[in-house]
Image: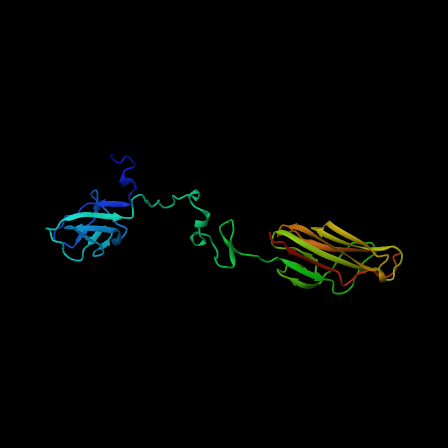
Length: 279
């Protein structure tokens, strides 16, 4: 019974090339169906001359085969077989879609991402390499270097004039005592007002006030009635959105003594700081 499946030429990876008519030359043009044919390499060709299979004793350049010696015009080319093409077809440039690729088959070396690819970087969603981690800057911390006198029951800007650090020079520690970061983002702002009501008696308290662009956004209060020496502090922290250009934050303090006696001031333990939160 004859074979009734798919034609063998549809599943084989062997191509039959046109036989060569020798003329005494050493070089000839390989063709298939009358058209010049470029093989994968000389190793993928099998040539039979006068019933003797030739393999490894010729070279190939483009569609030209060179036997290294003249082949007599009386010789007969029995067949030329080319292995390795068949059903394998190289796709045209830019035609392979992502749906045809397995995730594990794509290596970083094949990507056209910008930046430096090494053990210290990672690939971002925007196809750029970035350094992992980053820095929480701009950032600063400053404190009041000497006790600052304040009026009773009056909100006063804390003059935190001495910096522990100021990474980008965004804190003004001489005039406005404000933090104006130059990078947009969310900032963790922390601060403490340490109030002292001197020898005042009766009911007393101190308030820490954080302002953004001149408006109060967060405050905290503590009662000093039972504090030794009538000193006490209030601490607060909060997250503030900053636009990286005009937004600023300032620290204000308020000390209250019911009898109004004694000197009221912000103690040197008053401080103010902030840093950008990485996202």
